[in-house]
Figure 1: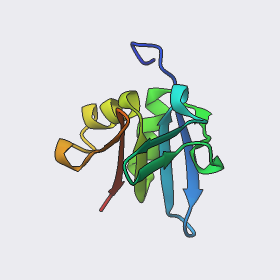
Figure 2: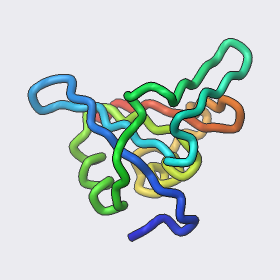
Figure 3: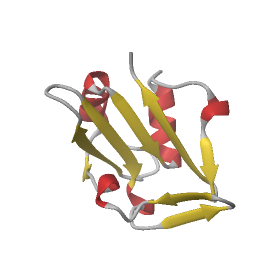
Figure 4: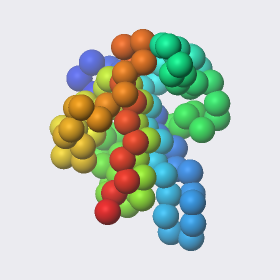
Length: 106
């Protein structure tokens, strides 16, 4: 399954323990940029956000095993919401029109 708007989603695992990890999910088109609005900064130039392209099936598998999801970008957020991992739009941080959310999976 590929993204209908051909925006590639990148994902990267950041291990925080033996079997737990943060899954960083980000739209490829915004990697390497810095977004600022007021006192909020979203710095996507750091290696934390630089993942590898992943298809939707593999991304879903990785999301189900993650401890924390760190999601940035419109396509990435839409994918996570579409698959029922996050539904509360009031909790999404928007910086220069770029959405960002962090979710702890219990």
